[in-house]
Image (tube, rainbow over all chains, first blue to last red; front, top):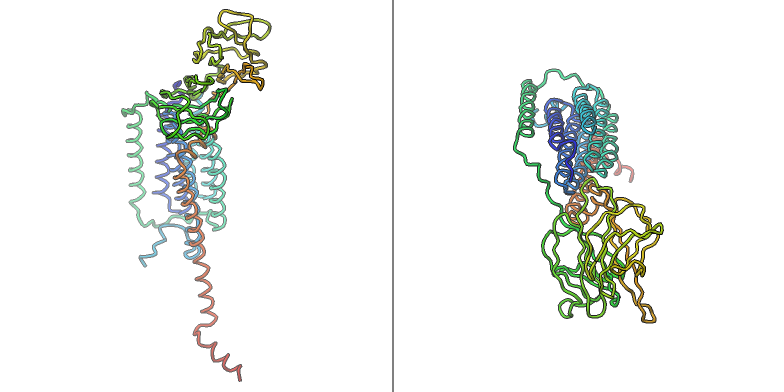
Length: 104
Length: 398
């Protein structure tokens, strides 16, 4: 197997950067839809690392895990957006700081 | 070249992610996220995962982001309310500090850490079964006690399958025989080593049946862009044979002195070989068999088995069994992913299907509850006391 021109470490580093940006989005933004999009970004960063290691080891299992992550992400988006729509109907707002159902 | 592309696309991906985080308009955020997903699809292509790249574009950048945009526009939530008096003012600086610390730690671990990436793990051996037995119409083959193939016809071969590396006991039976009761046609130990593509070829006739193994190093991720030839001598006169390129009225020796029931080494041959002939050892004129109009291509591994076939009038004719395998990079291709999916990941696949089903029902339940509640509220508003109905119907009876 030839050594690839772009090292696996670089892909993993990029994936770590993207993952952290996603995490920052989850922590900093207050819009529920944006938080969901940040979660998608984190999942994608993890997928990138998985694909990089799959190439490193020449093992197709990593690709399958990426495939499953994508499927689960699709399911998560369907449920999450349904939740957001349901919350928006009652509260007329999707700012998660305003949503405290148990407090008052 | 590849590194430059990586840096450029990586910068675009990071900038798109940053713009997604800071843009005030949720629609702009979604569009930047699509750009980021497209960059990641490009990285999948660089990582020899074309199937994932296509799925990334269609499922992620297509279906999921369309859903996001649809919900944003449906709710009219594209303009965010200005974030006045946040409830947790300490959260933003804390999150920044934490993520920066996390980034530094992961970077140090990745760059300076002692991750051993130098020794790529070996891939499990592939093997296939070929029937070149003249007398027996169809064969079954068992590795240890599991049946690998049933009713394999003459000249047919199975697809390559993966096995754990190790030593196996291969037994060949006539089709439909019971391995507990019947005697095998041939029994032999075979070694399946990592990174090898092994062909198990049953040859011979009558009482002398052999199982010949032809193994070949598997091409790596890139494919090696050459044409390889391996031959197996199964001709009934049991003498050494020479194999030669006989196209263009010339005779160029390709492989020499292949003993009976053995496979040759794998050799590289030129693409423009049109005909391959097999001769008795040292003889250049009496051609035993030949493969004409070969139409060979690069990135192919060619296995030729020279065997014989009984004619209806009991005379024998020599035949060439020609098996070609494409050795170009198949890692990450839809076929490769599909094979893994249907071999080892059927159960996880079923479970993911269940998760999707649960998500469908969940989405239905989450949005449906609202509607039934509203109906009850309407009825109550139209008829607040609920006691009005009965007296009226009572009245109409009079």
